[in-house]
Each structure stands twice: as structure tokens, then as C-alpha cells.
Length: 78
Image 1 (cartoon, rainbow, N blue to C red):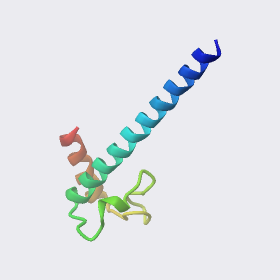
Image 2 (image 1 turned 30 degrees about the vertical axis):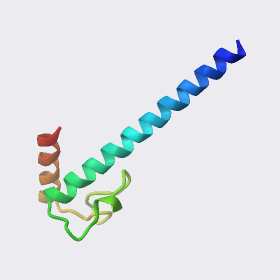
Image 3 (image 1 turned 180 degrees about the vertical axis):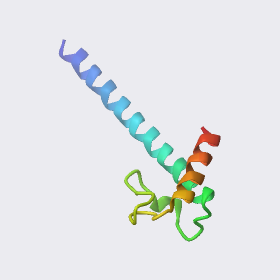
Image 4 (image 1 turned 90 degrees about the horizontal axis):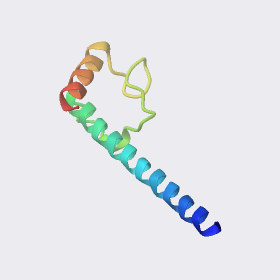
């Protein structure tokens, strides 16, 4: 019983790590799409995180046209 519980816990930890890795990969891909979509050559994609804002005077401070370009680029890619 204890052994099965230990194995189940290990499986859960592996799933969490895989999910975290997949999320990090997706954030990196989306950051590159954002940089390419609006030609943000002065910003490194690595500096963009899941918490980075796109507009509204925060984060990347993109205007509405830039945000639309990002949306179109994401739709094309995915």
C-alpha cells in the first residue's frame, strides 16, 4: 500500500514537471511570436514572461494596432 502511494506520488510529480516544462516552452514560443509580430528587436524574447503585460502602459506597452498584429500572428501560428 505504501509502495503504491509512493509510486503514485512520483507519477504526479513527473506530470507536474512535464506540465511546467510545456508551459515554459509555450511562453518562449509566444514571446518569440510577439517580438517578431511587432518587430521588437530591442527586446529579448527571454525577457518576456507569462506575467508580462502587452499594453496599458505596462510591460511591453503595445498600442491596440500592435496587439492586433500579435493576435493575428498567434492565430496564424496556432
